[in-house]
Amino acid sequence: MSGTLDHSLQNGLGVYYLLVALMNVGFALYYQRYAEPRKPASATLWWAVAGFFALHAVAYGIFHAGWIMPKIIRTTVDRFADPISYTVLSVVGFAALLYWRKPLTRPQVAWGILMFSLLLGGWSFTDDNFRQIVAKEDNVPITMLIYSVGFFTWLGLYRAVQNDERMERGEPVLEKLEDEKVLVWPDLVYTELICMVIATVVLVVWSILLKAPLEQPATNAKAPNPSKAPWYFLGLQEMLVYFDPWMAGVVLPTLIIVGLIAMPYIDFNREGNGYYTFAQRKFAMVTFLFGFLVLWVVLIVLGTFLRGPNWNFFAPFEYWDPHKVLPLNNVNVSDIFWLQWLGTSPATVTFPGYSGSQLLNVIWRELPGLILVVGYLFVLPPLLAVTVFRKFFIKMGFIRYFVMINLLLFMASLPIKMVLRWSPLNLKYIVAMPEYFFNI
Image (cartoon, rainbow, N blue to C red; front, side, top):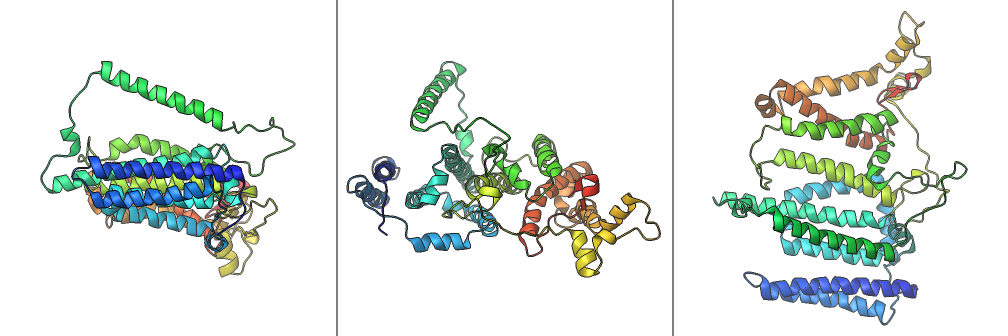
């Protein structure tokens, strides 16, 4: 586990581990002195964790130890890292979080997960390839985004679990106990003033410690590789791998906005208004969190840290080689139907009995894909209305149900296309009409 590390990196890791140790000192003092009831056993545990991180701080910051993450761990992670495992683990982690929300949202368990992630982060920083990507000035906010999203997700689920347990005991929810109103002046204004001062100080310190990620003036003679959108559009850029630009850049973002606008009007559940709860709003919570965490935040992280030159996927500890080439065949449904099943080239397919119209020939060629799309958007909703979503259909009515189910189907189209693209089929388009710039 020994190696050669730059002294500035060793000092930085020393400061990093010292801060983490101080965080654990504060957590231990809370359980030792302020928690009701006090928990000396928990305090002892976190004192030990603080000592563990303090040992790392002394080793790196004072003795300049060359501790690095073992190569076997890095190579193993890189060997099994690919878009499929990344997304599957994200979905599995999301499902585990909701299923075991009660134990996972306990403060000590959540704090333990945080400490484990910080320990892995510090060890990973000893790898040059990992550090060069994560420590880029324009990638630092994404790391902050990961931890801030994790904190607020934990906070919301923690309050929801508390309220669900209180309602099971017949007690009022926490928000009812905190129903006291305060005046805008001075309470709210003072709070906003303090937040503004703290935010200003943080931004000033940030601007001093981190260089602005400015590059050379834009020119068409030299494009950066990879050429990435701003972080908040990286999810959309990732969708371009699976959809045509008109779908990934226009239709799906529009449906996201329309769906968020329509949500209050199609929601028939009046429980959970004004307080956190999971038990009373399972469908809404699962749907919204899956769309935000898995289909948005996970894609932003993927595009930031794992998409390198030529938009290729790179493992966390892999060198971003600009010459990396991954051959990938683009297979469409029409290729599978006409070429693989019937042994006929799709380019020679013509409409039976009338081959003079290009439009009819293209429609006939793409008829298998069109049938799948029509079945997905127009046949599947009624089937779901009389089976899985029967209760929803009865309570919501025809219009609200079909608005909701179509929004869900469009949302589900992204993971479906991702799976089809990564599967042995290498499926690119369900319907491919390049003659009319219409691909699905």
